Amino acid sequence: MFLGEYSHSIDEKGRIAVPKKFRNELEKGLIITRGLDNCLFVFTDAEWQKLAEQLQKLPLTQASARSFVRLMFAGASEELLDKQGRISVPQFLREYAGIKKNVIVTGLFNRMEIWAEDAWTAYKQSAEENNSELAEQLAGIGII
Image 1 (cartoon, rainbow, N blue to C red):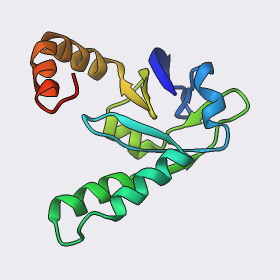
Image 2 (image 1 turned 45 degrees about the vertical axis):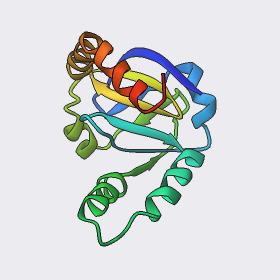
Image 3 (image 1 turned 30 degrees about the horizontal axis):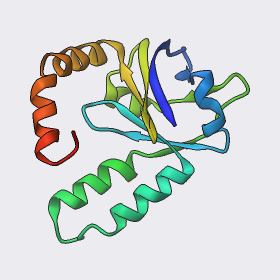
């Protein structure tokens, strides 16, 4: 399980150190892809397969389904941790997420997210300011 928030930087070769507590989960390989809200999603191979099976069931005739599948799969890259526990983030994914130097790696149960530090700060501030509204919306669908 991925939990927490970690500050890292990306090196000149486009590598990011994965938090030590996440490395065991990712040692067999990982998939990094475009996420929502202009961050990157990082999945274990097993979680990626679960997502792929769900996305495969989406109707090919629905434009929004095709767009989402394209977003996730066309932008996906298979990566391995190096001996220092780093992953390479392809240039096109760094550009998508606006990653220049400082990043925030977040753990969100079944995936990691990688954010440009300024984007994460803005997103988190907005979410914290609107947490009552978010709670009400979740309560409306029976979550809280």
